[in-house]
Length: 189
Image (cartoon, rainbow, N blue to C red; front, side, top):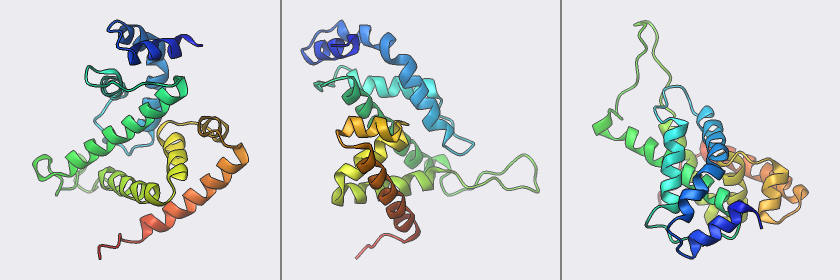
């Protein structure tokens, strides 16, 4: 049993000091995941990797979280999901009228208009992922592990306990599904 798995088990059993021991062990990896994820965002993202890691950590092992973690992989999969939710919440918040969601950014050069915020794209991606999850939950889980946790096909396959070949096929299916889903407006009827 790895040190991380042992500490996660202690957290699940209610050890109040275990959470303090966990952060130094997982911080660097969480920071790399956050930096990778934020690098995929368009310029203008105000959320920093360190802030994202701290928010994820608080959600996962904060005082309200009584989640029993099976192992290190389970913890990092949950961290990827938490990052996804935080980024989507941030994107939705930015879209709000209170934060100028109805306005486009302008660059300092008056002749150039900045590209639209990634907030709309991230929200659309989240909505599409939710629709995929309703019909293909395992494929959606693979997408979360690949896109939000930055895992490779073999790493994601190991986490999902499927063969890399199956994971590769699911990934191809997911890419095609998202291409179609993000081109078509959602059916409101």
